[in-house]
Image (cartoon, rainbow, N blue to C red):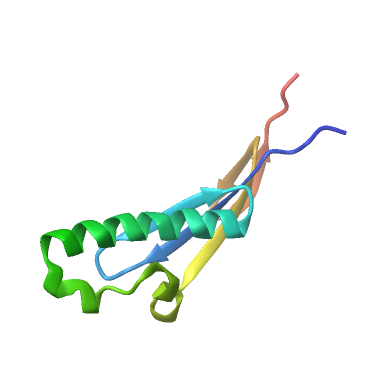
Length: 90
């Protein structure tokens, strides 16, 4: 039996942006997403320090925004998150 390549994508919709993170597990995808948020937040706060209180820290983001997860398998075609086709590799 061969190992199946899987990818998990975490997605968070904020007021202005869509943040995504990818990983082999939900936790890895979540951490990648939150790392992207931290980089974004740090950049905004560096330019506009007065906004710091209005931008949640990464560890508090899930109190303000929902993170959704999608799981994908290599070689599968998807429509609206549902598998619809499979390719075979010789």
